[in-house]
Image (tube, rainbow, N blue to C red):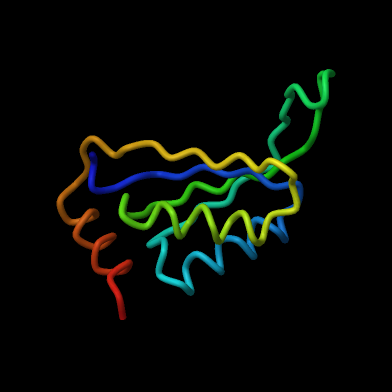
Amino acid sequence: MAAYIQVVTTTDSPDLASRIAQTLLESRAAACVQVFGPVQSKYWWKGKIEEAEEWVCLIKARSADYDRIEALISKAHSYDVPEILAFPVQQGSRRYLEWLEAETAEQ
């Protein structure tokens, strides 16, 4: 398993995206959260195609913290089934990954 991940979640408001980012950072579950949007999302929900404006959070973290990240997002999120997807970081600059490690270490 890769030591580092990038987790993606989407929200229905910039305020919720900001709260999730702040929670993850304050808990040291993430070293960085980038929030961008709005983006236009189209998806299946309850048998029909829906469309919504959403904000995306890109979360930089250690793989070991995934369960904690998922729990924190799920607790704060307004969606019944929030998108929470993790992608392994296959490679990255040594200095960036050292920084990520340092910022997510137990304080």
